[in-house]
Image (cartoon, rainbow, N blue to C red):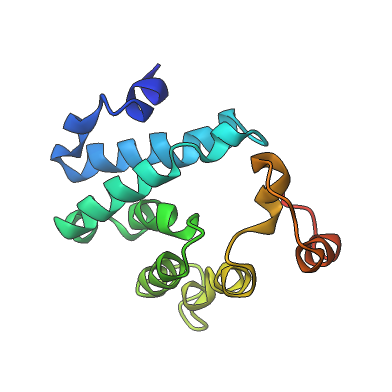
Length: 150
């Protein structure tokens, strides 16, 4: 029920504080990817999630969050098929402290494969079938050579 209300724009009051804003981003970005997996609805609230995340960052909410939470706030940019969003997401995640691998900085490389895909195709080819988009021969070759997404 909360997802439907969020997708209908009826939870805008959740943007009043960092924690509730993050909850709204999670509802709009992560929840549909799991409950509507492999359907067009999986991506239906992406633009809303991105807009909420952008407003949160403009208000400095990300600076008030723990790094692990910020990663999820930045995720709508990472899911975008816009190259500027991809590049920004990669830079934002790279700026986070990396507890897993502080010496080698895994966060610095996070998202780079997605940036490469968007630079090459202007979209995520693995979404084409779900969204009813026709794949180009180059996209089909790319999809044939990649490992299935978990």
